[in-house]
Length: 206
Figure 1 (cartoon, rainbow, N blue to C red):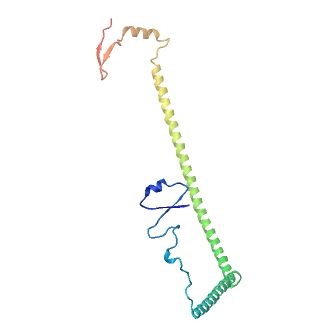
Figure 2 (tube, rainbow, N blue to C red):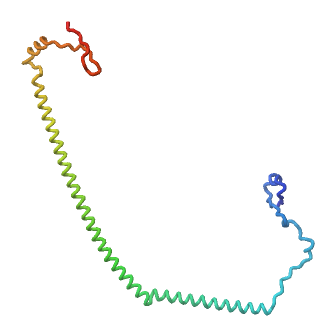
Figure 3 (spheres, rainbow, N blue to C red):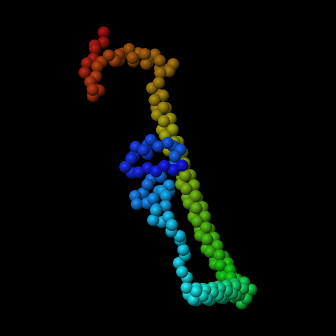
């Protein structure tokens, strides 16, 4: 079942079958399969001798210790139960109930004061928000009115310009006159300009 290997043969560890349990031998100790030493084959284990007087003294002292510890535990338990009883149904419970009621009243008063304070803060905040909204609305109305005025002014100027330009338009009434002016004053659009827009070369009309 068990197979013993030593430190000096690492190859055996690799070549050992998988089903076997490898138990590494420790120097100075026997393995599980080693027999009993020859010097201890006839040895019989005997318990150490016990002194009867010492045994009686130890038993008495242990009994006394057990009684003392049990008495202390019972006393502590009784004191704990008494305190719990006084806290639940005794005078301490009544005093604690009064303290809790007083604390509850003080907390309710503080809660009401805090609610009033928060209400005032909230009303001030809402009032400021309403005022800010009114200011924004007024500013927006002023901006819209200014934009409309500038738009109307721009359109009026554009109408005036178009009316001025319309005076020079060609219509049936001045058609003959404009034709005669064009024939009397011919214009040559066949010219070249430089980078600055100046005319540098122009052809002569034939």
